[in-house]
Image: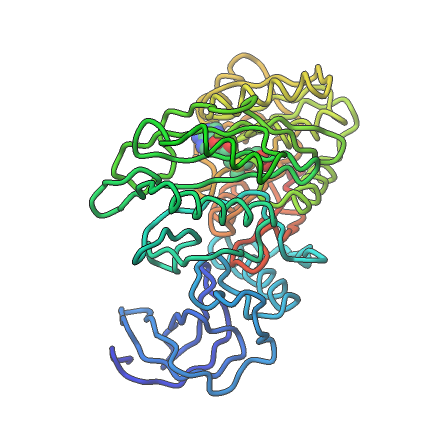
Length: 451
Ligand SMILES: C[S@@+](CC[C@H](N)C(=O)[O-])C[C@H]1O[C@@H](n2cnc3c(N)ncnc32)[C@H](O)[C@@H]1O
């Protein structure tokens, strides 16, 4: 038994899915923010449930051999990087272990998991910054939230961000002060500026800026455009997004381009991609190329296959697949992303792809009813994984291979178990580190049809 508010000594032996250290007291798992495997800690229990508990780190009694001084001075308080105090090689080992254990525990999948493909230089990799804007004392604050809270940890230099994103962050804070702009307050629902989003093409340096407003327009808009362009001439698009709701959801429905073409262009492999303000594009371009090349390898195409790419976004994986498939269908729910996917086909001179707007769980069954079947299906769903209807339709189509790209090992495990129960076998599981220093991990899995 564990008691709340008491001091304990604990040895951390794992990390949880939010990056917290996990150890056991009297056989009960206890989650401790800031603990890493191998640490011996003095903690105070803050919350005790029947089967688990939470503790607050009081003192590191004996540090883990993998403990390092994080490059970022805010690493302990900021919720952006949860495991920066761990040596990078150890991070990769622990992530592999987490994928393996999650597949076993949730999905009863015992296939071996390959070593995680990590980055040579795991810093400044993020092409996109998405900073909430707040106010503290007499100045604006911008940064990631503190772990498990909505308190903004103010920063001027985030070590995993592309330097251009940091430069624009500092500029925006100065502009807010200079022109007395108001900042959104989550509690009252009042104030104008909500989020500041910047995205840089790590191929040609093009930059996009989006300001999310609780209102219609930015005061001194023309001055903002002039000054920000003086600072960063590679800005190709500036947009405002209007979100008037009292909600944690970042974007509202309405986006208006107030400067430029309304997109930037990035390149992955041999393909170029136009990206609009609301379209999904992986945040780590270097590792995304590794991820997609692995997915393409697993598809092992000969040029004769029809491939369906579910949850296709702006067609990034689809366009990789067109190199080697006869025909590719992409399905995606966001209209702007589908428009981008079609434009991206034209941009790359691709004629063997077709993109359908709608929910994967509705459009895939329709496609099947129309007589379209797939030799290979690729899925890359959001964190909640695939809808059951999607998995059912895939099974009915009887593809020889399914390639599952996932950003959440738990829902991957759940979905793999369903597919294994319906005649598929998990053959290869390759994690790729797209989110260095955070607890997240991306995985490509190959399943083949039994018999
Ligand atoms: C993890 S992203 C993958 C996008 C793309 N494959 C890529 O790598 O850039 C998941 C995508 O699924 C889309 N999405 C979410 N729910 C969906 C649904 N029910 N049907 C189709 N697409 C959906 C999102 O808009 C997003 O573009």
